[in-house]
Length: 106
Length: 113
Image 1 (spheres, rainbow over the protein chains, first blue to last red):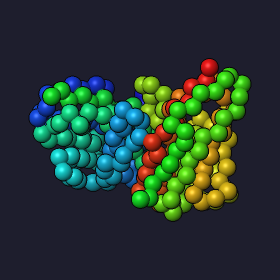
Image 2: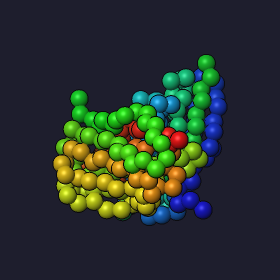
Image 3: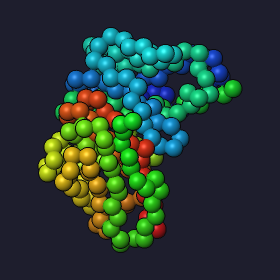
Image 4: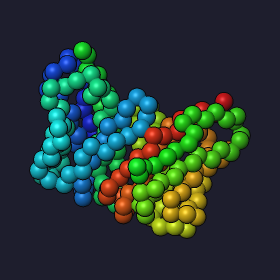
């Protein structure tokens, strides 16, 4: 069993829909990261959080430390949000999930 | 603008040849990392360096080598000993240690034929 599990693996939605991607981890962490990987391969760091909730534009990340679970939400989804979203748990190193491939259809 | 530059973006090599992937950062970050990404798997750590002239093996270091002679540069050599070198390689840097202020490069896709 991976230390960081993401669900779903693939997600296709219509433009405008509210999107939720989930991440569960089994290790103790100092922080949880959400990353975005575009088709070209480059990765952008979206959020780093250790408690509560963070918001940036249409993106919201939440974490529940007791349940070892984090979610990434996208409101009013747009085709440009299509990418692979990766969560990563950091303690003495970063452990990555396998990613969720999101496709937003116009 | 500050960032990480990886070159080249695509690289083809014949089996049995060593190849070096470049990673340069102008962020003044102390720590640098190399990760390998394969389809259906999370990124896996190959090597990392937290200060100049020092580096540590990650989870899958066999068949790879690195150097850290300058703070801004952390090249990765994929040697002929690496059994399955075809993969996507990502370099990253951070302000201090794992989990702090990570910045990723755009990656190099290596294909060995």
